[in-house]
Length: 341
Image 1 (spheres, one colour):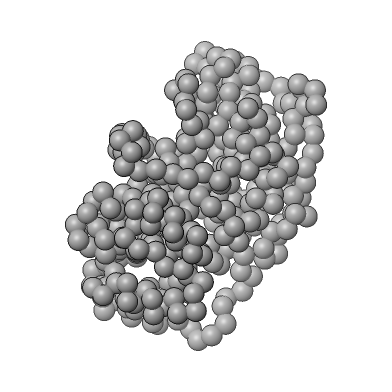
Image 2: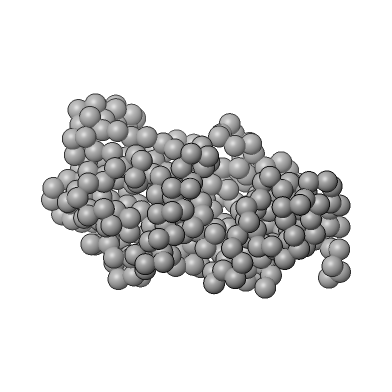
């Protein structure tokens, strides 16, 4: 590959239901020219996250959909190759929204410079970046856990859920995780320090959850929806708080689920139990909260109080299969793709 070539993966078609490899196209094009105030970044790591499934569709959402034939969007960590902005120089480590490609031309105002010599530069995409910030805001600003309360976390082995549980433990709560499979549950307890973890795939999952929370649930961090939320709903205490971060169980759905209308049950429970159920989009909060998050999380990571497990996939060509697997729960920890040394 010539140094002027840029390998990239674009959206070839919109998925109907679960994404397939045919929805993506791998291609090589010329590296874009650099204009004034722009920076050319060589991406080293790119982040794969569930929200990308929503942007592959053209349904109305909080962000514009990815256009057909456009590069798949993603947060990236990389190095500056060339710069036409005085604030960035060749070799600087940067955080960008560089997408699924080798090289990205980014406006300088949209870049964040990273400290030189980071031991784990990909952490800027996980525990010190968007997933960590999502966990911090959702739990502390909406969930507001108190000592001795019971916090239940869906998708507890994932990059957001695992951090939610660790922060909740720092705040003195009893923390129950929910994950897909015994191996993930073992990691949630042994590596992340949760008090217990339940396998959502177990036939008696709902009964196990009821026994695990004898005093009910004070905070439920929602990442999943579906049958997991069905089991949680009747266990929510008066004045429970439910931060709604994601609903991965329904991201590939093409219609409403079968069965009776559950809206009256949900609305009635929210009313009787005086529950606060609040959705949030983390991009709304960078301006006024990100510095506080970085202060807290950096100190916790340095002290060994909060940690992350990364699932690193080698090679840009493997990004589509890795993303499809992410939506099926095949990843173990924060999923990143390494595309350069």
